[in-house]
Length: 177
Image (tube, rainbow, N blue to C red; front, side, top):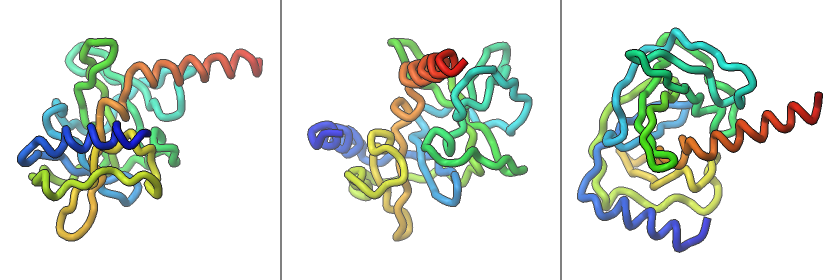
């Protein structure tokens, strides 16, 4: 990702005086997402698997009559799939794709708390060394002397990119057959 794009993302985060972020755990690391895009947090369960989907798509749930895809963030970050425990839950987010908004659920190991992080406490994402793609990160929040990775939900859950990955997986399977 180019330096100009990083500066634009950081500038967008910096324009906020103070942001409210939901913090959660995945694989022993703390992440955060702005609460502005979060609709609700629900208990993990009642997933219907969908054949021929990428590994990071756990399935779909019925949320008040709407079909909502559920993404395993750990697998989306190129790690092993999340182990489901009694603290696992699904965070329902509203993301934009193709100019329209869509609800997407993400599996997290556990939800921690809502934190207020001042813009002065948010650093730009690292250009290297992170275990996830830097375009997924909008910033690194400093909380109690430790860093919290602030995710850019629209990038992580890009409906367009996930659709392309699904088509690529379908093409690879049809070639192998």
